[in-house]
Amino acid sequence: MSASRLNRRITLAARPQGLPTARDFHLDTQPIPEPADGQVLLRTRFLSLDPYMRGMMDEAGPGYAPGVRLGQPMVGGTVSEVVASRDPRFEVGQFVLANAGWQDYALSGGSDLTPLGQMARPSLALGGLGMPGFTAYVGLLDIGEPKPGETVVVAAATGAVGSVVGQLAKLKGARVVGIAGGAAKCRHAVEVLGFDACLDHREPDLKARLAAACPDGIDVYFENVGGEVLDAVLPLLNLHARIPVCGFIAHYNERDAGTADKRTQLLATVLARRVRMQGFIILDHYATRFADFRRDMTQWIDEGRIVLVEDVVDGLEQAPEAFIGLLQGRNFGKVVVRVAD
Image 1 (tube, rainbow, N blue to C red):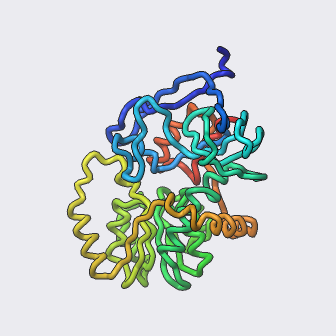
Image 2 (cartoon, helix red, strand yellow):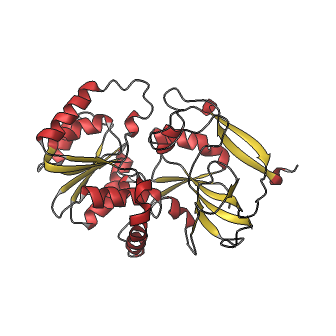
Image 3 (tube, rainbow, N blue to C red):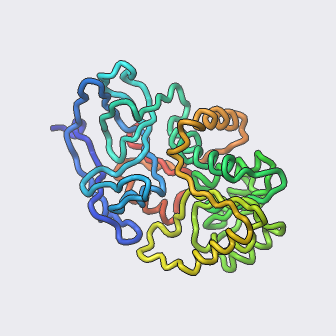
């Protein structure tokens, strides 16, 4: 069988012990599947890489979804093209938002597909106009509820979620302080994204620098990192502060978190400061909020009020290394893999 008639897949070869390595992934080939009645065959054009995938590599999964089975393709959102259809709802050549995972081709029964229509940059459906942007929108606006003049702090400030959080907070009249890894990222947050300030977490004494940057305390902390950033934030929280929680990337690769003292400090602060700290899984909000999000975000992007940056990696075979780099903070913006032109 020619290479053009094979489906390349990146499967989970082993459960990571801490940070994933290249040995935890395996590239194999399978025949391209044939759609049955009611199915469509999808070809992956763009693959999204996101931090939640690290939890999917564990046997138990991240708690809201089962883990990937060994030998099966890694999961992931995709922009895919319909290349064969036995479902009258979808036409050959149509682009859809799908969940095809880390592979060239996949079958779908159609229920998980969202037609994209005409998009100048279809990959944005995986970033600012997709799950990361939607996470920022719901977490900040529905849970964080920033008000004019308040101080909003967000870590991973130039990442796919954090960059949108900060810009949305500015749209709502808040003062925004970002935290990022490296001087270049901090300059980008201030000069391009419009943050009021940005701190490099790699520099010493983050707690003192954050306190100086937030003289009036912190009203909203968008939690997507944890670790030393959370430690620095806690003493600065104002009365009735809000903390939307969508992840703890700093702890994803830990074998033994050993955070009993931190948990005690966290709970004591939440109680004394009357903090609203609410975890959320973005999958719960698609039915009620996604249409509003796509309408608002499309308008803000068209008006130039939201700037989106993509970190595009070419080639499916590059996905494991790009994913490991994402977990280490080497990316700049939303990471997508261009699987096919």
